Length: 154
Image (tube, rainbow, N blue to C red; front, side, top):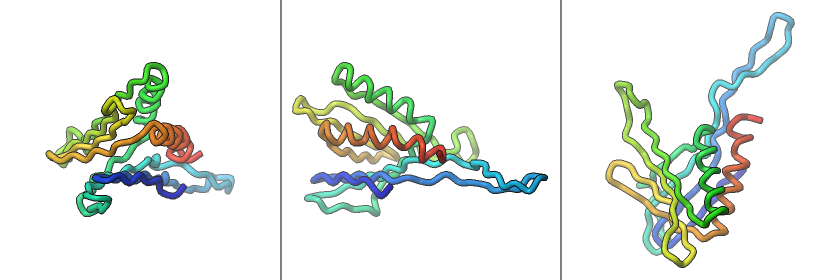
């Protein structure tokens, strides 16, 4: 899949896949097998901007893993059921280890009463918000659903 891109006046969002990593080995009977070493991800990049000019040097990235997908799909289900979009995912790289990284938080929520939804990423005191309409949200839902096969290497 090529990149999915959303460009707004003051921010942009790109989504692309990180492919899984595979290991090939030959068994004692000479048959070649593959094992997945690491699942893939759906990588989101947010960039701030002004008047549709984006500064990708200040981008914030967030990798959506297989374990995040059920929570995201549950949020989309609630949106269909009651019109409310509410999601919060927090990632802390190497949590609990000596080289623990800074936390990143991504959230999706209802915006104003004009049918706008917001996707926000926050880290290290910085945040970027990308406004979306319902069609954009439904397109993202489809991407998240389809990403399961790619992330798991099916």
